[in-house]
Length: 376
Ligand SMILES: Cc1ncc(COP(=O)(O)O)c(C=O)c1O
Image 1 (cartoon, rainbow, N blue to C red):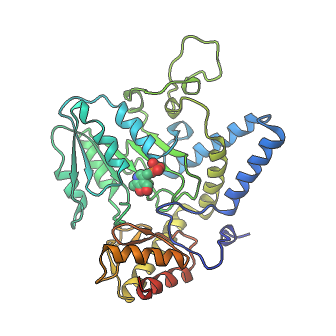
Image 2 (cartoon, rainbow, N blue to C red):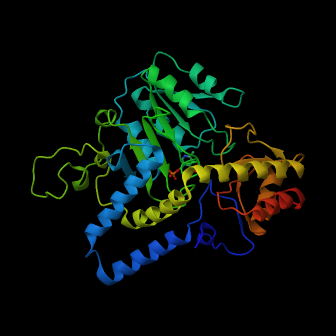
Image 3 (tube, rainbow, N blue to C red):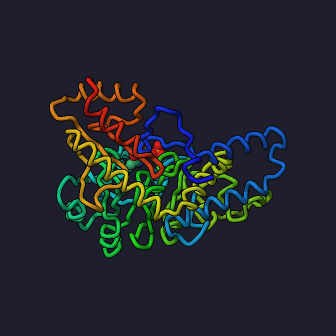
């Protein structure tokens, strides 16, 4: 079986919506079924094996981001949860500042806005210019404690140079937080190369996994500086010692996980990542970029205006385009027509297409042709 057989999508469906919710590969669906069957027949009789799968998943996630090992990985419920653990856990002083790009997905704005009652000021910086990193760096002041960016902007598809931003933050002792949900699973990420202190990403987009399970990486030296806000049996160093009245939080990422893990999600995501790692993340990245490049070309040739930057290094898997002459309402109608035709996409300041590495050429050309021709 090749990776092509892992995606038996319904005929007639051009699935270009991985920036919203991705599809599961066949092996992920099978893992879900097998886990359900096992629960029905044997309950949790083999729980130690489940824990091995859990550890295997943490190792896969650690490998994906270039972290040291499974202990670096916390499993959160979603990206918003992961960002909130960090935002609420830091020891803020009134007057501290946070810098984010303007146009961020709400979760990577609200997590910091919610600190207003502690006197934290949020700076949103326009990154729609030639040098978006310079814009972010110029917004930093002596009071900036944290910079938080999406690796790839959810609407425009702009990809930021994380290495450059991370180096800048590291030199100034500013916490560098990366919301990687729009790239992890499609683009490679190395937490050391980009000096990331925090990485947050749910599984349901480019990682081809289920909703409700997310990676939270917090660099080892930052972990003890985050006040823990939720408490329970699972987060302690000596997990399983239910009689102990003395406890301390685990040194690992598990300290952010108060209770029972999402074992179903763990089994499914472990299977999804096994595929991405078999194909190889460098290959996946190359194929995603190929498809994005090709789609931009097709859309432009068909007369659409591509809003996503076309410069190499500035885009990832998201391609957003507009049809000249159509207003917002007409774009909404165009989006509905595309969906009705089986072109699965999103409406995000234009029509947002997001192919993954396995997306066939035919899906790209069909989407471009329909986006140009369909009467909204
Ligand atoms: C950049 C970005 N961050 C966060 C989220 C929300 O993620 P979650 O549902 O995992 O909290 C999204 C979802 O589209 C997103 O695009």
